[in-house]
Length: 134
Image (cartoon, rainbow, N blue to C red; front, side, top):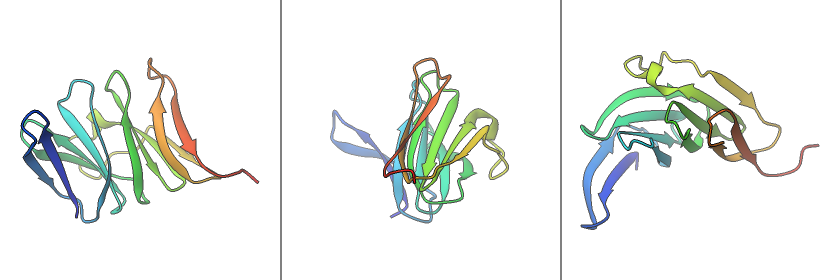
């Protein structure tokens, strides 16, 4: 429904509704410091959210429906995964530059992608694909 919900697990209640995507939200991640969230959507964007205020701080254009998002362990980088594209963003540089940010890395995949993860030192981002390479 295009919304992201912030839940208080101890009270089993929704404490904040984050609105902004024009398509279903398909992925979410939170920075290690728990101050910022990223959400991916079928609307082909990644949105960044200030969890304290609930305000969207940036929209990153992925270019295809987003199936996964992941922050690096140091919180500096954000990976977004679409059907056949992995993008890595310096998300802090994107805040306040709605739609104007460019990824620091963009990789096309010969097989469909379903996820991404960073190594502990954030030096490598691993894209997870399914299928066989012809």
